[in-house]
Image 1 (tube, rainbow, N blue to C red):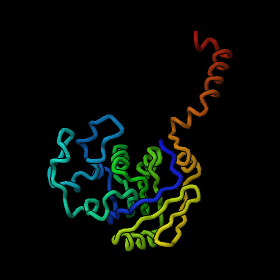
Image 2: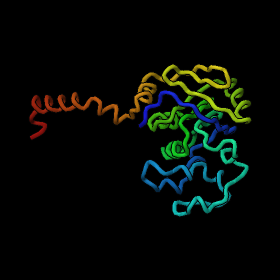
Image 3: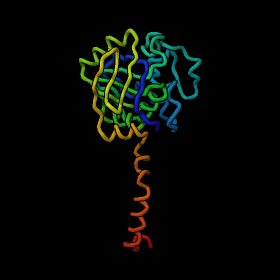
Image 4: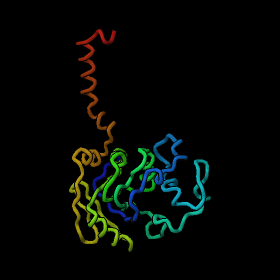
Length: 209
């Protein structure tokens, strides 16, 4: 993963509660086994007027002009603003892969479903939970088009000349700042792992005979 330290980007508001992972990534796309390439399918049923599938070229499909993320002022946004219980539904990790592949680096919402929240951090997407009062204020601003800066190191959001503090678990913050997923974090200790395995084999040879 790429380290996340400081990011400035356009905000796209999705003023819906209980946005579930089935809507983010419909079941027909779960047959793909790669971890990239899902951006054109994200929010598929809301985003397009025509039915889609893996073999259908998204460029041939009509976009829904009423879907908020299709509106011109929110194109190329990299910060997604949501409401409560964002990411509920099934545990499909494809949902986060799709949001990431759309170009979103940050999701800010009132609350998140636990598994989706964990999947965000495991895939380099910063998920920030803020109070409903602050979220309401951000939605009022975002409908006119705004940008904000996310400072993960200092846990601050700078938006429209205001600063908003947020909190991220220390380990999650460390991993994002250093671009580490769980596997990369483990591999940082590969010398200690090898030393333990050698010592274990020496002291318990009957396990390896």
